[in-house]
Image 1: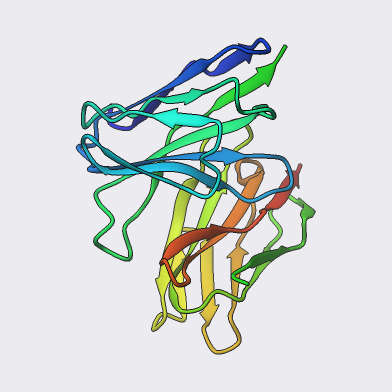
Image 2 (image 1 turned 60 degrees about the horizontal axis):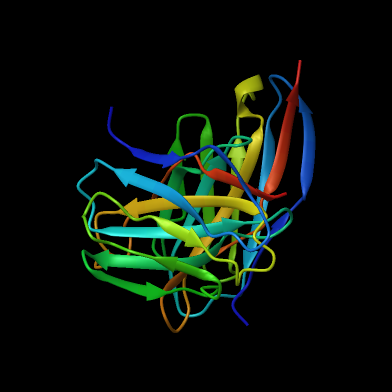
Length: 115
Length: 112
């Protein structure tokens, strides 16, 4: 069953705690992305990676970190520096960024809440 | 400023009826425009991608139109079904960095 798997579906963070959201894809896509979705707002890009061992900051990278050690995996860590982490987090992938009409495939999302 | 605005914010229709969702954008330069369907608590799923030269594109009961001159797009849903209840997001790729700019979505509820 091809696609993008995000884990866990729900996550709770205590104050001062770092938490990691998982994202795995078996689509053999080069590019992967993390977006944040808040009620009443459009999706905002946190980080993206076009190739293994390389990633770039998006529009709202502060308080977040990522790694891309394997092509299939792109975990996102929400650090204690992110003061307002409650949101729906979406991981996405595409074949690459070279084609302007590249279709973006999304995972099912992780809802992060603060205790 | 590059922006994507959608209307209405929310819409309720009866099953079997048609509806049209609107998207206006100010993104320049323009690469393409996408419509996504997002079920509650799920990730968005692509419906259509339209480039500058495409006026109309269909995907089953979904038909998207694009007027690049007026920078407007619409998504028409024909013979709505209960499963069409979702948020519909308009996304424009473009701007100086050719990135994706997301609208806030139209929340559609189809009632029996």
